[in-house]
Image (tube, rainbow, N blue to C red; front, side, top):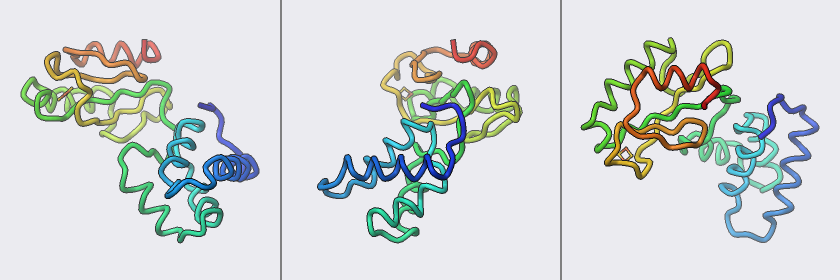
Length: 160
Ligand code: FES
């Protein structure tokens, strides 16, 4: 994942390169969008018209897919991304209270990033760690029985 905002030329090159790699596949849009997010950390809105042109789709088609899947971000994430599980098992173990406490402590809502770019708070629906809920994924690493104190420590420590 890159840490700087790409230029228009870099985005064009990235999209063309990914389209070349996925040429011949049936319905490559999702794969390409995942690859864009993996490389950039998000799907830059400028990618939408580029991909539409390259794949001969309408902008609305591409935009619809980007906005339908919650996994796609439209802005760069913070240095630490905290994804709180809100599925049933974790909800029964206090996930909703944890979400509210995290929102209050970080001063942002789910889906947002702190103004200093340090932390993104997100939601997820089951991390396969149900018995150890409430569960969270912090910079890709799953943790169980988390509390807001641990989340804040991770946010301060860059996800460690
Ligand atoms: S319900 Fe939260 S990890 Fe499965």
